[in-house]
Amino acid sequence: MVRLNEIGKQCPIPVIETKKVIENLEEGELVEVLVDNEIASQNLRKFAEQRGYEYACELISDHEYRVKLTVTERAKLRLMGGERSANEKIREIKDCGIPSGKAGKKSFIVVISSDSMGEGEKELGKILLKGFLYALARKEDVPRKVIFYNGGAKLSCEGSDSLEDLLELQKNGCEILTCGTCLKFQGLEDHLQVGGVTNMYDITEALTGEDIVVKPC
Amino acid sequence: MAEQLEFCRGGGCAAKLGPDILERVLSRLPRTKQDPALLVGFENSDDAAVYQLSPDLAFVQTLDFFPPMIDDPYLFGQVAAANAMSDIWAMGGRPVTALNIVCFPQGWDLNILGRMMQGGAEKVAEAGASLCGGHSISDVDIKYGLSVTGLINPKKILKNVGAKAGDRLLLTKPLGTGIVCTAGRVKAADPRSMDEVIDSMTTLNMGAAEVLSRYEVHACTDVTGFSLLGHLSEMLGKGGLGAVVHLGSVPCFYHVPEYVEDDFFITANGQRNRNHLGDRVVFRKAAFWQEELLFDPQTSGGLLAALPNETADMALADIRKLGLSGSLIGELTDHTDRILVME
View 1 (cartoon, chains in turn cyan, yellow):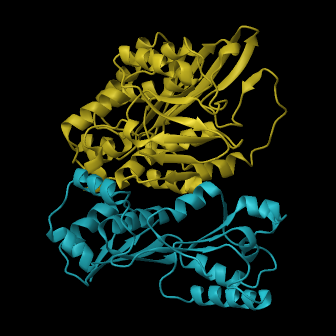
View 2 (view 1 turned 30 degrees about the vertical axis):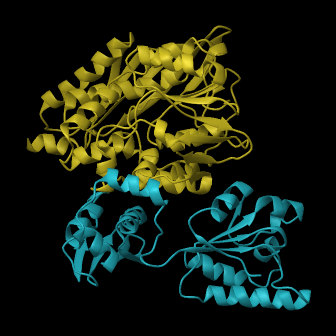
């Protein structure tokens, strides 16, 4: 492991110095970078996402963030294939859409359109949906987003049995979004408890994007 | 040379405090009883204050200063002055007087200070305004800028809000000054991109403003530290107005894609701008460098104006006749409250 102390250094110096070091490491090796502000850790995350390194960040104190970047197979292969110019990459993005965030694994989003899961007894459906969200919150790979609309909008509002699971998902980096029109229609505008409000525009964008869409039915 | 290196530690509008911090503080300031002659205060984060003197006359007041973003003190002085006066043109006024604001380390070579102020004075003269004094203090770092007063017809004030759905968005300078100056700071900038950026930053927005004064303009601002998307977001206001930005129409300086994608010359304030705007911006198939470009803090950036669809092409043609690299980069939309960035 290589340690870099970037405390007191302005962006983009921490990224540039990390880049210099990590490009000479082998698969599985990691760089630990200390930075003194969240913005620097976010810029390191963007670098990791672009190059396929695994990223983890730990807050040590208000002015100390420990960022770990690990060399993945994908990142190494890409380096060995030679540095590609920005133009080549732009072409690639045009050809096949935005590359998925994590190496090897396809990112997914979950859509909840009702407060009940499956067909049959409504009460049973509610229990099943609660169980689904419970299990989802404990799954190793976190969905990129969970979107609630129509009857599903109740799940992110006051009185829902799944609020804790949604908070857990949110804590793990999942974006929780609820349809604004649905909240308004059901008089729930002031009762949203977890996550943000979204609109049909963004929902359409999410459903037709590159992510796998999962809908419990 | 050592002095030259220290002269620029990364500045310009990239050194601005983040918009989040600023909003938090400004919202807590006591609201004084509104003077009816104060036509524009800071409630909409506009570019300058406007105070009415008579039915046909008001004055515009603004202040901008920052640390150097380039190594050459003379050119930095020019950039600082062009940037400070820009707010006056963005409001539809013309600068008449200017005062220097200088922070300079005691014991440093006074030629640096002299060259810096010479650059500033020349730009004030180019604008037809008078430099009439200033204030300087000793500090650990160099900072320079100006407080500028301009005159304006109160009936012709260009606010940063007031755009309408269907308007086209005209931008009068390319983007990427933050990214290129960062490359310059780590001594990795291609001379061509540095030349392009300095040429752009020292170009007064006076010509573009004169063109706009001949057209109906619904909203206007200049693009500086909060990035194109940040200033566009302010233009949308809070009334549900949205915008579409077309990636292919956004001009950028030479080599910017490579500085971002290959070298990661990205600034802290670019990321702050990204965090501040959050999900108000939706990217559809934008490359990483294009996202960074749109969040890049600009120093002495161009004017961003919302014009009716019918006259936007003519205004663009007039801007280009002046040798400026204007472009129509998008349009305003109804009811979305979002900025959609797409091909």
